[in-house]
Length: 113
Image (cartoon, rainbow, N blue to C red):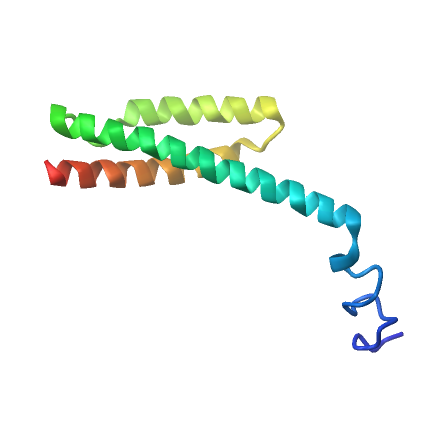
């Protein structure tokens, strides 16, 4: 069967083996969706705290960035990633993104003082 529009073709939506009808794949996707939701909520909590740090730094005249702290965090997360069986490069890229956003928020807080 080579016609993907024919109902017996595996790529046709109504075919029982189409990914939309695969219970195992749906379970994996549901698990991923739950993890993604948890990550978003954890990031929201993290940024609530870092906003408070930014306000504190601005009020105290401290610089928005702390390269020593950032380097220590990168090292710590690389170790945690390795222990968890995650490629440390992924954790470092993720943390770099988060740090960049935190610094941006800290700069905004400094501008508001």
